[in-house]
Every structure is written in structure tokens, then in C-alpha cells.
Length: 217
Image 1 (tube, one colour):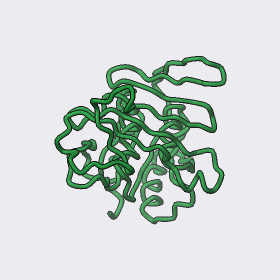
Image 2 (tube, rainbow, N blue to C red):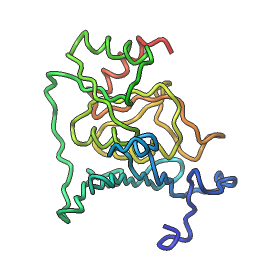
Image 3 (cartoon, helix red, strand yellow):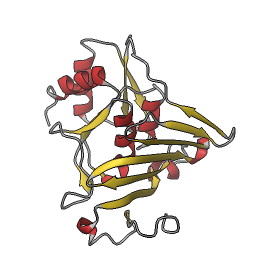
């Protein structure tokens, strides 16, 4: 990035971002998202990259090295998946799901009672399937239709969520804070996020917010 776009600063955990609020445009980078997955030799770690303009994600990339796969998208277009082993591009196909069940994505071993409260409310309307996976890899599973809703009640950093939020917004889904607002990037005093709800479309958005209202935060 520094070579291709030397005029655009990079915001990451490893960079000096003390003057970041002066940047109207910047890259947001996490070179290894899912450190626990990497240490435990699970394939669910990713590389996250996004371009931020005036606090909004306009371009997103998530790479899954172990699967030799990349997800990439601009905000106004349906995203693409590139399979390195086949050297082939695939574009996301928008489907109106007729839900027989709701697949909820959680981190491995999540035991916080709030997640169970969240799923219990959804279970009043649909059977719930729990899908466990690491960090931003869950956003990839959402693009693949393997996860419908991803609640997170623990802090993350901006570089953990920006690319995933951008990709979800490009398919008609999104990511909202627990105060029901989209995250704005490089805008707050801290690069830490509070919790969030991620969803794939307006149906799962409604389900997510209804369930969130039943959780004792």
C-alpha cells in the first residue's frame, strides 16, 4: 500500500496514528486478524484491509490465507470472491432467503449469558443454529450464507470490523453498534469499538434488533 498509494496514510495497530484525525482518507489494516485462531492452528485467521473516506468504509478486502480466498468490494457494488488456486473471480449473487432457521455466528467457546439471551429470543420465531468461528472470518461466512447474524458483546478495534462492515453494507446488510448506529471510522477518540450486531439483509436486521432489545447489556 505504501508503495502503490504513498499519499494515503495507513491506520493499523502497528502504525503511528497520533495524527489520524487530520486524515480525510486512510487505509485501515489488520495484517493478522484472529491471533488466537493462528496460534491454535485453525484456518480462520484473516487479513483485513479497507479504505476510509470521511469516516465511511468505501472499499473492503478480507483475505483468508489458508483457504487461498479473497473477498473484495466497493460500497455501491456487489462484492467479489477470488479463488487463488483456480485464478477465478465470482460475484456475489443476491438471494431473498426463505428462512427455515437462523444461523448465529459466535466466537469459539462464547459463554456470555447475553449471547444465549439473544439466541433465545430468535428461537421464539426460528430454529437457531450456532456457528462458531474466529474473528473477521465470520464476515466471510455471512457472505457465503453460512451465518445470518453475528452479535458481538465484547470490544473490538476499528481494523477488526471496517472491511466486514463495508462488505455487508454492499449486499444490503450491515453492522450496527449496540446503540443502533453504523460504526464511523477514524472519527472517535479511541480506535476501540464497543459491541455490535452484524446482519445480512433487512429481515435479519429486524430480527437482530428485536433480539438485542431483550439482552441485558
